[in-house]
Amino acid sequence: MGTLAWQTPSLDEAQVAALAVELGIRPLTARILIARGFARGDLALRFLSPRLSDLRKPDGMADLQRGIDRLVEALAGGETIGVFGDYDVDGVTTAAVLTCALRAFGGRVVARAASRNAGYGLGVEDVARFAADGCRVLVTGDCGTSDHDALADGRARGLDIIVIDHHELPAGVSEAYALINSRRADDAFPFKGLASCGVAFYLAAALRTRLGSAFDPRELLDLVALGTIADLVPLVDENRILVSAGLKLLSERRRPGLAALAILADLAAGEITAHHAGFRLTPRLNAAGRLGEAQLALDLLLASEKEAGDLATALDEQNTERQRIQELVWIEARAQAAAQDDAPALVVGAEGWHQGVVGIIAARLVDQFARPAVVIGFQDGEGRGSARTVAGVNLFDALSACGAHLSKFGGHAAAAGMSLSAARLDDFRTAFVGEVTRQSGGRSAPALQVDAEELLGDLDLVLADELARLAPFGAANREPLFALRGVTARATRKVGKGHLQLTLDHGGATSEAIAFGFGDADPGAGALVDLVATAELDTFRGVRRTRLKVAKFARQPNAD
Image 1 (cartoon, rainbow, N blue to C red):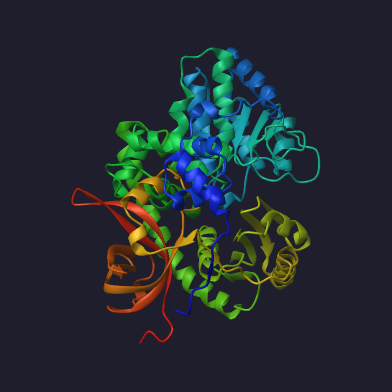
Image 2 (image 1 turned 45 degrees about the vertical axis):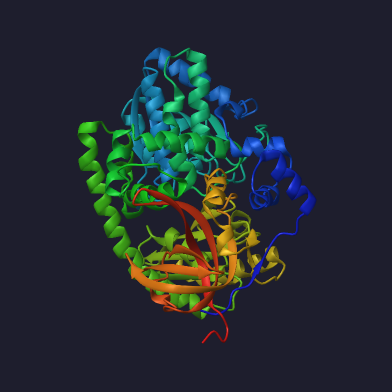
């Protein structure tokens, strides 16, 4: 298991003490807030208590008013409006947000999701199909920015296309009727981290205000929370507010499709957290798009109570198949990555790898090897890949620098996709590794950043309650990490699908812990280990307690 190295932030202890007194919280919680940039009491309180009233107005969102004007015209004239979402969770939730809102405003809507088999984004064939359905307006979700051919075809057909997206803009002038994308140079909205579903929520809210409708767009926030969490955008500022409110709504299980899916994900009751959403719900929603047709996921989000059960079951079955395929690819991808262990970035690929699981594999490689990873599945020599990264490496910039070797690419700083031929793989790998080296300045992976080194007894129920107020956790707001040195594993056992449950003893304090995915790394009862973990609330047989969720651990040198 090797050894663990970590770093803790260097902070002004007087400032920590002052904030702790001002807010009535533990100094450890104050340390975490200050390290995340919330040293002032008013800013920290706003972070701890996110409110929808703190959302900034969409003034300055480029083309938002132009898009609203066209939709108001379409609704007043009884025009058929097309809605098209990309095949990932942000895409289908964006499509569901738009469809629900437009139908609530009295619109006649044709709603579709992309097919992975047709490739990324909006295609010319998609445009032709909407035009054949009599649509005069088409709104895209999480795609369209880079789809020049489809946009030009739509314009030629007299179809006004309103693009809602958050991906980087390629060179050239867009053929869209309206391009609502914060990446535009002339977009003046102060927060640039919204996922497409968040942009769609703003459009729905602004449209409701214009129309004076009784429909409350806050009913859409469960969808916004799922899409935002799934798309790895930063859970700060507007995203933190939207996700916090959305998770509360999601926990009420009002939407039939999501309620049915929650049951199959073992979330039949209780609070649904960002972790639940990210690891139990969104993988199931993603399964349809990963294996081919995302329409099933969109249909589920729009389903009535009568339809929801069958659709959720079908989606769950696809997720089971996705897991089977994923594990086969993972074994080969991990072996390829291990052979590149000295490289600052990993690029792996093979003929026959299912292109629907490459994003998950890339994320797992980043977790295991702590460096940017690109995973490519080739079919008949043509590949589609997905990339994930670590702090300090911007994927969109890296792929832009390697564009000569790619047929197509898109995405943002944290996650991206690309197409390329097998003949260009080696050249692309060389270029990508070189660009990552340039961005990182040749530095090796940094030591693990933790919030503090603590004793087990300090991670008690009071602290866990305070830490829960820092949620929702995700990109740019990770769960607090604590390092513990010299912990005794009193008991260990493998549970579930490859997980490890431990009973820990440290300085006379004991705690239960779970280490997901570490089932084959059992140190054995009595082992002395160093570990890095989060402290979370857990209810066992009706009793609230603290449980550690172990991120990494290693047997102490010479512990035997």
